[in-house]
Every structure is written in structure tokens, then in C-alpha cells.
Image 1: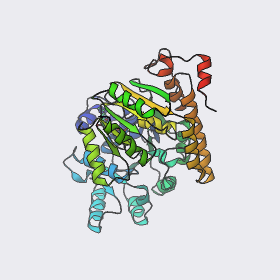
Image 2: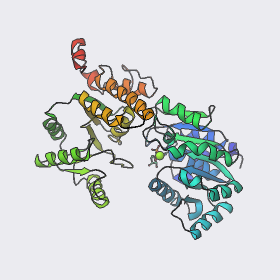
Image 3: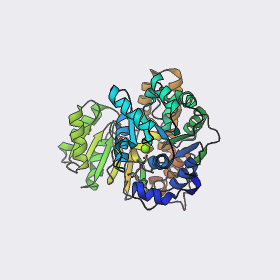
Image 4: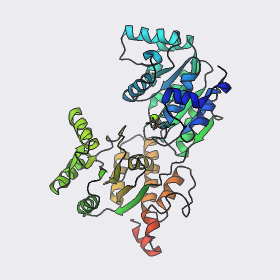
Length: 420
Ligand code: ADP
Ligand code: MG
């Protein structure tokens, strides 16, 4: 079909049941179906998947979707299959498939049934798969979580570095990069690495006007401070992030002793316990999850009312992602971070064992965290500036939703805050 003649709203309704595109989706879809290299930067939950799924469904051939996590791929494939009567419409190609399954996938692709083929980057390097993909019609290659390409991102994966070479072997197919990482540095890396300087770029705003940002100086009274905070938010759901498993256990216990229903969550717990604690939180059997960063991937609880950072994270990118789990429903989300320079020194110490290049990046990211914690300007403006976005801290949406704006520090006080 001539891409210009496709009625996108009709296709949107037909496949997904939605009446309207969200944000920049329609422009992105148009860019992809007309065969352009395209770069999409949208916050988590912004609707990036549809940006490539809809074009894949309406274009001839099969779209290859590269994604780093097998669990996420499976979810997406199931979701796509539920939209269609044809199970072959979407497939995952990875090392867990047996010979018969691989043959079925190949058959469905060759016959034109398969519109979306999800692959992990390491599977895509397999000669056997490459040869096969070379012989079939590929509509485009979408690279989800494209920040994995960049060492400046929070989830660098070396095998992502190779993708451009592999894509080249597939011939001249359009490439779509998608990410929720908004820092200009990561974006530059992605465009450079995918060798698509002239890609059509679509960047949504990262402003979350319903989130309130606050930083408190970390003192030895932190535990009673947290307890007081939670009691002020009685009956509300919240997450407390700690750096170490030990701290997670400790805080969860302190909360329990003080009559707050809380469960720990970290990678040291067995899978069954983790799943149980996660469910308890989702079902509101407990109010609070105390967790390491292991908690959050794919958690979609809309009414998380607060996210507390007992320990400051290692980058503003992580901070934004973790606080972003609050207020998904649009209601208020209070993001409270405790800060002490001692914690920064701890993080620096972690870094000192790493390769030099990684250290340099790590220190630079930490400096930004320090600057954010110590700033007396609008925190929202600071965060968005970090993401390369201008924010009007007088009239912008959510302008008064942070401690510095609500209670401006006097100059002297602001100076006092700087820990040397
Ligand atoms: P991202 O990958 O950007 O984090 P997803 O693609 O997972 O976001 O989409 C987030 C949610 O938004 C999903 O539940 C999806 O069904 C929903 N969504 C996407 N596009 C639309 C739309 N046009 N209208 C309504 N809901 C949408
Ligand atoms: Mg996504």
C-alpha cells in the first residue's frame, strides 16, 4: 500500500482500539512508514512501542525489534498476538527456541504472516539468523532502549555497539531508535553509533508537573524523619530506595516495628519472595516497599504517592527514572531525597574499583547529582535542563512543585547548605 494513503487513525483503532494518538506518536508513525531513519525520545509510559508496532503492522515485510530483555519481549509479543487472530504475527527469536520452533518462525516470516520479530542483540549476531534475515523482506529495524548503546546511559550493553554493523548486513533498511533517556550526551552517542545523523528526531517533554521534588539534608535522625513522613501519608503507597540490601532490610524492619506495613525487595531475596512482596504492594496489602534499584523495572502501579531516596542515586538519570514511578495516574507524587556528601564519597569509592573510562563518566554523573542536591534554584528547571529542555520556572507547568520554589532559601542559608 502507498504509505501516504494509509488511514492511520483507522489502523490505530483497528489494531489497538485507541481513538487517538498520544503525544508525538502520529508524527513518528508517519516518519517511519515513509521510510525514514527515526529517533524517538519519550519518557517511560509515553507510548513508544506503538510508534513502531503500528508501522510494522501496516507495512509490507517484517520489522525487526531489538530489545535487551527477554521478559519484556515476551510481554510485547503476547500483547501483539492478542490484537490479532494470527499467532504468527509476532515472534521472538532467541536461543531458547528449539529447531522446530525456529523453523516455524522462519516459515511465518517467509510467508509474510510475521509483522514483528523481536530479537535480543546477541541473537542477531548469529550467522544462521543473519543469513536468513538477509533473504526476506525487512520493513525496518527498531532498536528499543537505544540508550544501551551509550556508556553515558544507565544501562550500557556492549553488544548494542555492534548493531549498526549488523543492520548494514541486512541491506538498506530504515533504522528506528527509541529511548526514555533524555540527556543530550546519550542522544548524541545513539545517533553517532547508529550512524544516522540526519534521522528525524522526535523528543517529548520530560516534565512531570504532578511530581513534587524535595531534598532534605541527611542526618542521624533520618529514620524518624522517614517514619514521620510516611505517617503524614497514611494509607498511601510509596517506595523507599536504598543503596544496599542491608539497608533495605534494616529500614523495612524499622518501619514494621513502628507500625508501618512495609516489605523489603532486593536481588538477594529469592524469586518467590520477591514476587510475593511485589504482589503485596500492587494489591495494597502493604503500603511501602523498601527496595534497591532491583525494584521498578516494569512495575506499573499508577497510584504510588511517594518515592523516597534514603540514599542519593548515582546519576540524575536514575533519579528521574526512579522518581518517575510516582504519580503515574496524574495525581500528586512526592519525591523526597536525602542527601549527604558522605554518600557521594561512598559512591565515589565504588567507582574507584572500575576501569578508568567508567570512573570518569561516573564522577561526572555524580557531580551533577551533587549540583542538583545543593542547588537553590527550581529543581524541576535543573532536572529538565539536564535533559536539554528549557523550563519556565515561573509559568511552566508544575513550576511551584518543589521545595526550593515553595520555600526559597536566603543567600546565606543556601551557602550553608554546601557541604565541603
Ligand atoms: P513506553 O515504551 O514509552 O514506556 P509503552 O509503549 O509501554 O510506553 O506504552 C505505555 C502505555 O500507554 C501502554 O499501556 C499503552 O497501551 C498505552 N498507550 C500507548 N499509546 C496509546 C494511545 N494512543 N492511546 C492510549 N493509550 C496508549
Ligand atoms: Mg518501552
